[in-house]
Amino acid sequence: MMSQTVSGSGRKIPVTIITGFLGAGKTTLLRNLLAQADGRRIAIVVNEFGSLGIDGEILRSCGIEGCADEDIVELTNGCLCCTVADDFIPTMEALIDRPDPPEHIVIETSGLALPKPLLKAFSWPGIRTRMTVDGVITLVDAPAVAAGRFADDPEAVAAQQAADPSLDHDNPLAEVYEDQLNAADLIVLNKTDLLDEAGINAVEKGITEAVPRKVITLRAVEGRLDPAVLLGIGAGAEDDLQARPSNHDGADDHEHDDFESFVVVLPEQKSAEALLKRLSEVAGQFDILRMKGFAAVQGKKMRLAVQGVGTRFRHEFDVPLADAGRDGRLVVIGQTGLDRAAIEAALLAD
Figure (cartoon, rainbow, N blue to C red):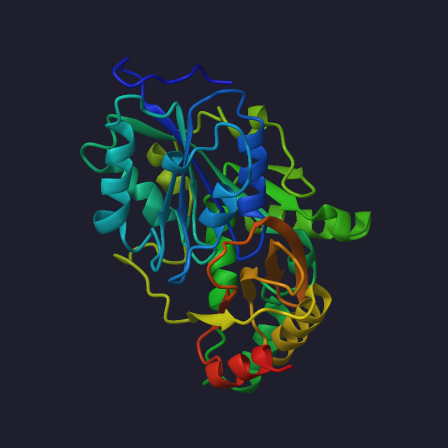
């Protein structure tokens, strides 16, 4: 592990970037990391796609000693890779200008973010001399990739193009996935408990073939990894951009017009089981990528937190509900063209 960095010592504060597609388990990994911080001052910057910040709220309610609100900075309704000048740079400068600055900063990007524009931001004046990218960690939802949800089938695409050359077969999901893999210093296959050995090996083989350089790949369940593996990589990734190709190299920025999100207000639910069943059915019916949020359940004093990837959902009763109001909030994320009215109606149906 690298030695701890102290502001004013002339050493740069290390920054770890955690990226990965929607629902890969980035926030869970962060919670585990904070739980094993052992008194180190770690600041967390959380960025989400959409207007409602769920991941920052989850981290604040984690109940971990030392997980202070002021050490969790939340940027919502935008992608860090698109809002570097307006949001990211001022946020980072404010963190390192504190009287007692963090020893390490961890950035959790939006699941739709391209890591490379964020890496380029560490060359900005005022940042480059004071921070370094210790490493880029890419989380992979192993069962989702095994099912082919975020990867193209090159042979099938070639066959379709031969049949109709006018078709546009670009896959924005695959492009985001590829860019996140290509930026990585460490790739973590998460949720490996949901696959057999053959399935895991197939995902690992696909990653090895896709990434143009040798990158360490680890397996994990619930994002449980020793902080010594995650922190102290010492990559200096901002000085290694040429080895991290992107589908968007040469572009000044990129758009997220391929994706959209909206928030649904959920009334108090009759039961957690009924809500989860309905969420899974709606996700499958409307091909929704991601749903996450909170709800109140009749007879329960604790808040129900739900996290879904496709039709797979997990839940827990995490913190006591506030006295005022029992309405919940659910973020829905998918490719552009979601039928919002129909989705809301389905989610609110008894």
